[in-house]
Image (cartoon, rainbow, N blue to C red):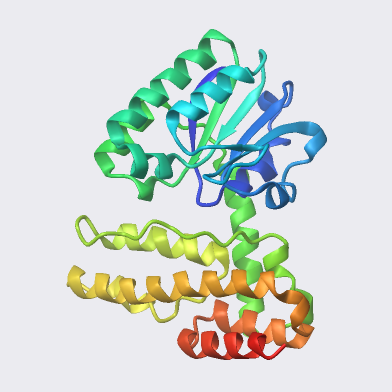
Length: 288
C-alpha cells in the first residue's frame, strides 16, 4: 500500500495504539509528525521503532514549524524508504493558518511523493473540523483508510471505563489522565450548519474523553437549532475550561495528595460547577 490516506479519528493517539496491529503497515519504519511533545508521544510510540518530530512553533532539535513548506521540506530531507509509514497530524491547524487552497496543494504534493517513492502517509483527522465541501475535496485526494473496527473497539473501552469512573470515584482511576485518555481541545462548532447529527458526533467525541454530558442531552431533542446551539456553546465552554484545569492538575500533581487529585478529577470530568472548581484548585495550589 502506498499513497496518501485520511483516517477519521477523534484523537490521534488512538491511531498510534493500533498501527502495530495492522499487517499492511508493519513491514516498514514509522515516521511521526505529531502535535504532541516528545514526552507525551513516547506514551504511544516506542522511540526505537519510529522517527518522531514535534509540529510546533517552539524551536527545538526535534520540532518542525507548523506550515506546509516546512513540513514538505522536512519530509524531503528525511525521505521515507519504500514501505515506510508516515503519520502527519495537525491538518486542521494548517487550514486555519494557510487556508484551504494552500492545504489542498500540500495534500496533492504529499500524495505524489508517497506514490512515487512507494510509502504510505496517514492523516489522522476529525471531519467535523472542516467544511463539508472541503472535507469532500480532502477525501478525493486522501481516501479513507479503514481502521474503524480497531478504533471503535478502543473507543468503546474508554467509554465503558469512563462510565464506571463517574458512578463512584475510585483510587484506581486517579491516574486516568496519565494513562489512556487524551484530552484535546476540539474546534468549536458554528451555528451555520449545526444539526442534531453533528451534535451527536461531538458528544461522542467528548464522551470518549470521559466527560459526563447529562446537561447537554436535552439539546438532542430540541427542534430550535438556535436554542440547541446555545446550550452546546455553554457546555463547550465548560469542557474547554475543564481540559485546561485537568492539564493544570497534571502539571502540579506532586503538590496534591492522591485524594485531592481524585476529587478534582472527578468533579472536572462531571463538568460540575467548573468555575467553582477552578477557584478552589488555584487557591489550593497557591498555598502549597
